[in-house]
Length: 460
Image (cartoon, rainbow, N blue to C red; front, side, top):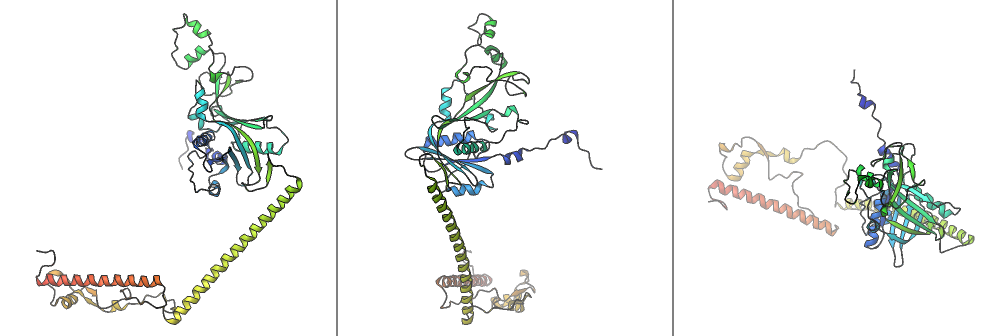
């Protein structure tokens, strides 16, 4: 019988983090063209906002094109692109939904970096752990009948993972992204906040004691003054507590005093970056589709129908060209094979290459194997007398140096009809063969000199 599983193994819950990571929308955030150092910092800040489902250390080269990013997006489960660009007049931000679009082009009216926002605050509430989970998306005032409003809302919602209210952990909701649509100015305001829960009914002095901080009581005559005085809020805590931000904690949350069942106040502190965006154009597809919305160009129904017809014709023409190119490639490959076969047949008729032999897998005995002699006879023939017994040559067989086997070097024949590179290769083979023959003759002369007692070169 097999060993029974322990209680810890039986109670182990399956880990679904990998499946959730694959289902979550991923993004690439990069730039095109020259945008300057300040915009580069903005790209880095936006990557920080979209963590952990974005490529934080994505490297961009000047030779990369949009097609390169699209090709690698599929295997990496990337669903959205955020592309920054800049011209002489303004900066732009493009949102692209993969793999079929649409593409939304925004003009960046104003922006502030993360460092600019934090420099104004007295108390910075930024932690590295809060970027290990995705932010909560809050959309405001996107209700309307326009098609562009629906497409913008759909684009922004699909860029962030969906939230399951029944299984979400409050400790993971530590950031939020606010997208507010200003109908009067027709602008979209982007904000990034840190979320904190502060227990209610606790004065500022008790909060310091709870946080294990030793308070400075030199200004107070009695300890009761320190406990009863609430104190003024800092700029990062400027939001006053009230019914609008008071909630009942249903789970234990990070922070002292945030117990289950107690009331706490939700406070937001901005951590940047911030942007003001204005929608310019919406295209169907990835940068090359039908224009669904344009702020500055208005066209009639007839013009739209003509553009749609021209787009369909252009698409059909492109398909026909592709089919013609494939046929031309097949035809050229076939002609190349036929020309090669005719060329080989002509070379066989002229005797430049041997005719095709019958396929025979049986091994053939080479002439070098049939004509061989032992080492003693070879030594006597080359040196002039029989070898001494100390050499131990015996009756071992050795291939004769005068007999040329199938692998022996042959003097290549240079035909008149051969190309220049074939003639050059033949000359190189001839030089290698001559070098080997010279080396063998030199070794034989050295051996003869040593046998007769004459010292060779380098011997005393």
